[in-house]
Amino acid sequence: REEARAALGIESYARVLALLPGSRASEIRFHFELFLAAARQAIESVGGSKWTIVIPQVATPASLGLSARAAQWADEFPALLGVRVIARPDISADAMRAADAAVVKSGTSTLEAALLCCPQVVVFKTSAFTHALVRKIFGYRGAISLANLVHGGAAAIDGTAESLVSECVGASATLERMLLIDPNRSDIRLFYSVVLYRLDNVIEAQRELLLLSQQKLPS
Image (cartoon, rainbow, N blue to C red; front, side):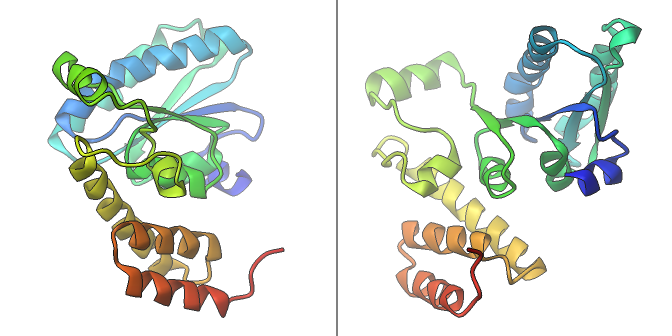
């Protein structure tokens, strides 16, 4: 955590909250202001000063203007609270390592947060139609966090199976990239094998488990 905070220029004693609202236009429309409101509530409820809100950005047209809006939001707090915002690209991993907690849009980022041991609140706001379809028509009341789904916290239902498979495909790509960077991460390899198994790629899952069995695992 200290290394990540140093990389981001955050004091070791600061209270740090990471916000990951997504990168698509619809995700930002549904989540960004909601996440800022949640951050405000956390600051007002917990109290204290020296709050840093970290917002990793993805270079998409939908993300244009988020830094300015976040800075405007921070300026609404009294100067004594020392609330500041760090919003820039390519800081997702450092943001979650540095944070005391994170508010995360449901998707592959929840799996990354779990692997980085970052406490997280997972959110996925939808349109009224989608909410009614999933909750009332299909009656789904299970997990929305990919970390929970991979761990086995919920079973896929017919109405959302396609989207869950899509999320698992995205997770497998993310985990594969992380293993290319550091092939000795046994925790990531274990998650990767589980994701492959959930995608019915049994042979590759067995291969990853075999590689895992040859590694020296932490006690």
